[in-house]
Image 1 (cartoon, rainbow, N blue to C red):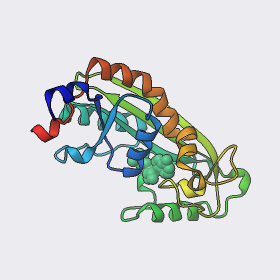
Image 2 (image 1 turned 30 degrees about the vertical axis):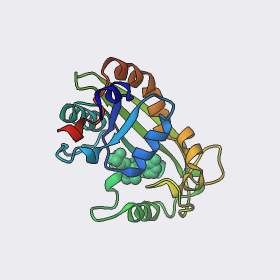
Image 3 (image 1 turned 45 degrees about the horizontal axis):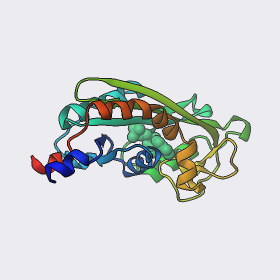
Image 4 (image 1 turned 120 degrees about the horizontal axis):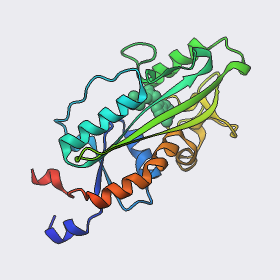
Length: 218
Ligand code: IMP
């Protein structure tokens, strides 16, 4: 990229997630900001610490390590599903529910099996997302978004990812997996968190424009 094109290019934000579903959603949610989002696979050498059992430190660590190693502003989230009948778990441990070796579909089945006999009145649930932005200069901003709903008895729909097909958001009579990406990206926990991060992100990007095409030059 030429110097002139580099100066004109919108600041680049690194999305610190290996989950392509999340990257797509974050891009769509922040679509109106004059930013470009790049994926973590641009920086294959970045290593992250083991995740713990709380959203905030997990999200902050993912954003801080990515910003520190890449030299770009980075965003990350840590999210999970909280189910009343599971004492509002698994929460930050949602990605590991059911034990090692399961994929999204296997985890969803394990969770639905665990609440199989729970009556409709006790199937309240919510998705939670804690989103963090970190700059290479050390600034960190953390926000939280939630989406309340209920667990269905069986998955329906192919949209979204993870637990979406078995979660019916309040105010809708279909599962999150049946909603269009447009609607999910309006009402979801991730939408609420990243919209709350938008102003800080726009301000940081103006103060610290990322270097477009940086990795190609390394
Ligand atoms: P992490 O935030 O990448 O650690 O993983 C969160 C876990 O919750 C994963 O198992 C995801 O499948 C699940 N999860 C997070 N966000 C969503 C969502 O928007 N829909 C469905 N499942 C989600």
